[in-house]
Length: 144
Image (cartoon, rainbow, N blue to C red; front, side, top):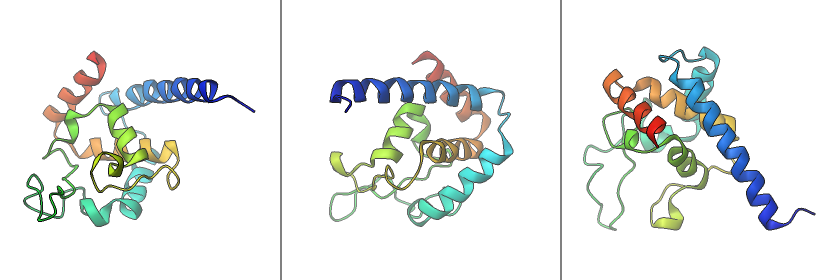
């Protein structure tokens, strides 16, 4: 049986390697792997579309304002909102773990999606972003 510290270390190293791979995989002047893009689009449509819209455009115009219960609606993820302000690691963490534990309403996808499926969704989302947004996001990921 592996101890908790060792498990966390293995997960941390694995996630670090995965994040390093993903930066390399998507930074090649948008030289996306077409299979990864297609998989990301399908996974998004099957798991995220209902809240974030078919093409990640959002489903609520006033996504930046809380509703009657004080919850923020799901934002657009297509480069028109704040998604690009978050690092690859933060996006991965949010999709994997959701936001319920921090007062949000996004469910965790940890038991539903594999790490590769999560990365495919991130790759597909970034393919929707305007070049200027994408470049700023990539610079932020390389600096941070």
